[in-house]
Length: 166
Image 1 (spheres, rainbow, N blue to C red):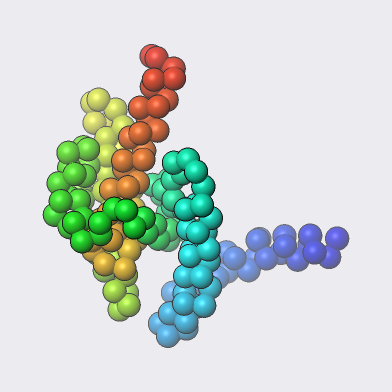
Image 2: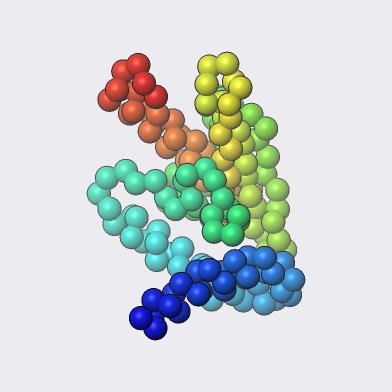
């Protein structure tokens, strides 16, 4: 009972409190927390996904923001070249129908966030927003490209499985 109460209080009070007040923390403390907690966690999760046999979308591939409204850093696998993801990645995104493609630095550590919008309907009235983070503009763009391609593949699979329905 005590464990359940502790987990509940952490989820209901501590996590939202940290999300609301994290921007008041000094940059050095945020950087140390990211190095001590976030990077080892993402490395472990990516290791789990790389051990799977089938195509699995990486963490954060839902196209939205992660916990606390921050983009989940999705790092492209080693078989996709990060160096070629600069203008080539932007061109491939545009070929997939992406608009408003942007890549901006997030902090002094060199982290970048790439984002774009892709039309969900033929009329272009509904858009889905994608975001991806990476240690460089090319890595962020490559991760963004992976998300859009995975989403397109899921749409094509659903359309093939149930004709007339998306």
